[in-house]
Image 1 (tube, rainbow, N blue to C red):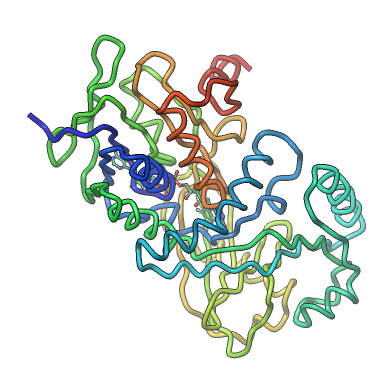
Image 2 (cartoon, rainbow, N blue to C red; image 1 turned 180 degrees about the horizontal axis):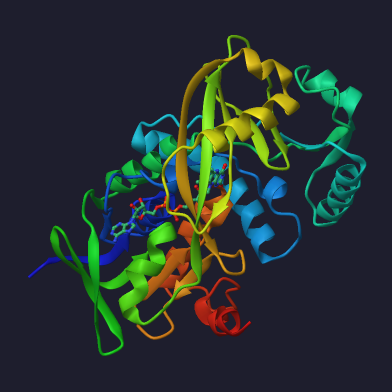
Length: 373
Ligand code: FAD
């Protein structure tokens, strides 16, 4: 007889840990099963941008969810830091989405209008104004869309904080517990088989990021999620280079604490390869120098990779399996899993409790359409 829980979560990335946190808070007996180390994959590799308005252009369900999730951080950060004793490094100094040419400026001005109509704050800063606020940025740029409410965190620390806070609320976290099989019978899930034995539960949530497709394979579901490799690097600046995050086509520069600056990220679709490449890093360095020439004088720190889970339509899958009762999926957050984690945890806990009776735009019911288009 295996260990028995109310809910078992497959994957100890930020989404698995956020779901565990929300369920544990509601009194569920939860286990998180992680194949390797907590936040060892995409969640530990992320730059930590909470870019609701920077990353998502158009108003719609995902944009709404992203803005809501971003605002949830304000109360969540102190709660998580208190429960976990992990410093998350939350900063709310805004984001500058820059324009390098006239077409990009026009596009950003259009975006500012549409986001304002959706009730969000954004303004256009001509280059003089931008340099006034951020003196290190290149004078070759034309200006930037300034987004005061897009903040940032330390992604690894935040993911760890979710896991530790869940544990403080009674959840059990198992590292190096690789799920080899879902236990499925009579169109229901009954638990999972792992390298550490069986874990039985009436609810199983697959939050395995880019590996979700593989975990779900035996349930007859071929989840349309592909792995997208991303490389990042960090440097140490003696004096602060920028206050806010600088975001451009193909490169962002994120100032962290103690002079650390993160530069990201490359994008390579259909790749589980975790090697850092010279080509990837040198392209980031070049783009970063075009944005902030002085970055050339900073000290090299390190480089790393992560694998983003990208769904076929760019929206995460958040809902119950189409066949097996009690089997849930929370995967496909692509470039925004850190931003979306609070809302993901809350929505999944609501779905498990049967609270979301209205249409859920992220449900698995859209699979048919995706497979046939
Ligand atoms: P993961 O973090 O990948 O976690 C899934 C976990 O499941 C892994 O730990 C894995 O080991 C485990 N697992 C897999 N198979 C099994 C199994 N069989 N049994 C048990 N466990 C298993 N997002 C933002 O919001 N802001 C950013 O600035 C940002 N920057 C990024 C930069 C880079 C370079 C990358 C790669 C991603 C970035 N992202 C960012 C995206 C974000 O990191 C992801 O969307 C998010 O981390 C996905 O979280 P997850 O929990 O779904 O997946």
